[in-house]
Length: 511
Image (tube, rainbow, N blue to C red; front, side, top):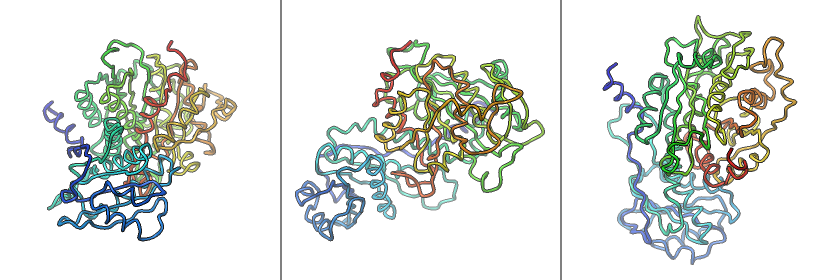
């Protein structure tokens, strides 16, 4: 393939729709709007609506019946455009997730109109208003973003082109927009069909994004990984019908730290582009959506890009483990023993536990850069889904001080997480008679905990580390402010943790 054709193909894998323009406004001309959405915090009186266009109409809408937190009402304004008015009610003690969920329901009310020009408002108490307005903006940007579609359409759908924020003083729209773009990039990549986002396509796409955002990029191909001793990763890749798997190492450095050798954070992501289960073949239903098994790599990539867009004062790396898990004459098998990049020997038990195999080597290689914090994302275990459903994701950490920061970041971002045990006595379930560790237990109980204990063998004890099992990466009907089954969960959480939770102070001074 020529370099020009390769570049064109990578461009074709990236979103092409322009993001809506976001403008601040003190007042809105309703006659120019397709929709106006307003969140009010209860209790609310007539004075709450006076700053909105056609305030009497809003007061009438409010007076229809007693207000109930979480409910949504609609009407149309009395102008030639018949602007849709959407009113949402929020409890004064509502959590960030509840704000996002309400905003998501409000955006669903606009779907039939396919609005192009809309305004967002959150009249009432200032602090609550800023938080509610951010939730509305996040929901609008998610709603406005089209996922990949390959239908033949005679009349393309209309999408939001302009968002006016009423009385947005104090709202960090730059952070909100970068977070939304990151979430949408995760959703886009995770939704791409596996014949398009194959290893070669992903590599080209990553190269395109690295150039666009001025990120350093090193691609460790299978030959380089063999030299590095990354045999756990290569075992999974051995079933592929062609070479092309690899680990992408991307680097972002702020202007004042361009030569920093040791990153503040290493973001690691599982990028299994399609998971058949290997020799331990999945059933039809279990395999159907396994093109989404690369969501962790998308979260790590999109978080790094968001940090670069925000010019965050952190030196950050991303390590993406990219391969398929296929069945074939050379696929790895149960009872094989392989040696990982850090010298730990692994007894293979089940070839469908491939995620922990590719992460083992990726974590070991990332650890060589001596980051202050390692944070990995992976759609790793069904056990975590059974424990939490798809409403939250699971987190684990080798530092007690990190547990509170992880849960706080989940609450504040609206991407909720639950901290699971990380006790050493679970290692008894991973003892091997022929190797240093078994890949997984024969039985599946507590597999999300055992998988994390397995991964901990590839993270130096001196390195603070957190693992995120992305049980909320997809959910039928969406989650929070995102209405599609693929949620993009992870970027809001990661940015909150790294930029707002003062997580590095909890880890102590840099080495």
